[in-house]
Amino acid sequence: MENPFNKVYACPGKGFCSSSTINTHEIADKIRQLTNKEVHVSGCTKGCAFSKNSEITLVGNKGLIDVVYNGKSNDKPQVTSIKKEEILTKI
Image (cartoon, rainbow, N blue to C red):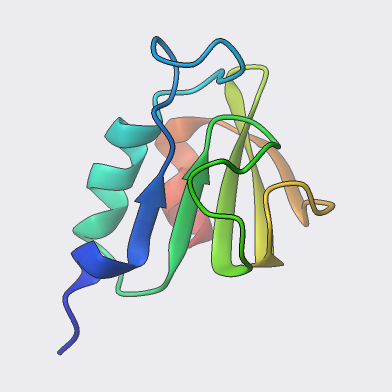
C-alpha cells in the first residue's frame, strides 16, 4: 500500500500566509489518515504548495473550503463553502 503522507500537499496556511483563510496543516493531517488520494490543501486560490492538478484540491475561501476535483486551486470548484468539519465527507 502506498504511503498516504506522500500524496498530501499543503501550503503554510492561516497564520503563516496573509492570503490563507484556513489552517491547511490541520486539515491535511486529518486527510492523511483517511485516504491515499493525491490531495492539495491550499489556503487560497494561488496554489503555491502544488501547482499541478490533484485528484482533490481543497481551497480556503473566507474561512470555508471549496473543492476542486481533478484540477488546481484556481480552477472553478465543483463544491463550495464547506465547513472544515464536513470536508472529510467530500474526499
